[in-house]
Image (cartoon, rainbow, N blue to C red; front, top):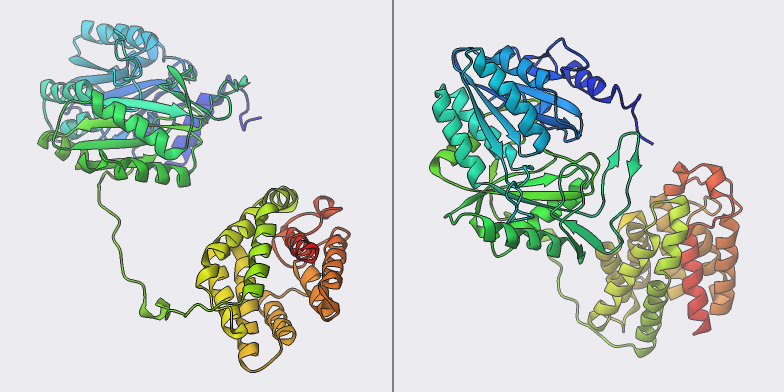
Length: 541
């Protein structure tokens, strides 16, 4: 399902929403709904060259959101993935073209070539000075006579918008835009197709695969390739783009979100591109950003423009449409030294074979329980409890040879530090507090049982949870109480406590407090379950 009123009104509703939320940014639309869907600047100066661009909708924010100073004078919107009508393009040209003339930019699709082309000829027949630039930046099919136009159009529009804003004549604006269009190269990759409004999604991309060289309209990619992670995907695109691009001392790079790729993924992909062996030649970066999307496609595209002094100046010049991320220079991450308080004194490792074997066995148990705990947590939380404890287990196993095992207080302190570093979320901090308090108690001469009880008291004090609140405390507290009778009894007590959480109708602490009782019923708390599984595994061993 989608948040739409109906496919027949989707685009006009969206355009009106764009304008209502624009804050009076010198924008308007032509009064020609539904056939004519044109967003234009109200502050365009007739003596300057007008820049008109557009195409099918579904690529938002392109192109309506790019109408504004330094970019477009008008954007012509078609229906989703459909070229705008001849009348709509003609209306846009006539509405913004004055003495300065007009440059029309569109992507290389048959419908756009025909509709934009006929509209241009009509305007010329009426005496308007109009030039055309067709963007053909897609390199997915290098031998195709008519390559598609994809996200590289943004570089072309920015160059054209700069020269128009500077007051250059139509011949100059068109020449610079044409040079950019001839030089830019683009390529995309996706893990899914897109969801067409009112139709749905065609799930044609199998797990473990990615479509390379797909178009903006949901059409299949040129190749179905194995997906081996973000680094491989990014570098496949980088290698092909640099092989296709004209040689230059430096380049501008656009990292474009095709729709539903998360910001976390986009930043990671940007890092992979810029950290690659080719990345050093990238001087300017546009994005990562959603600029020319394909509805909700889970993918990204890269565009590469060989830089000249003229292009660099044009790309860095100010622009103020509704949407335009500032183009920035490529810099390496700047490092600031950690505060000296975080520099920990090295702790001398010491041996205790029995304790080492116990901790190693505990780590194995937690790592083996990863899938089960994740599945359980997915029902009442965010599905990562298993991954969290398994990560901690792997870290502890690696750190074990370096830990002070001969003295209990120092071992507890080392456990606290290791968990605070490796185990994410509130559970990691709570267990770090547990072992830190246990360390302080042990250093004062308390037995290990009493030290652990002191750790539990501090854990409850800071965490705010008590037995019966449906947290890991429901397994830890009874286990510690039974521990003096042996590990078997502690494991049984932990299991009884964990199972009891499945009968609790509500949680009073932790992430489960946000979950309704209907979802909690019959599902034990994942943290309590982790404690029970750990102690049961240790008891068996």
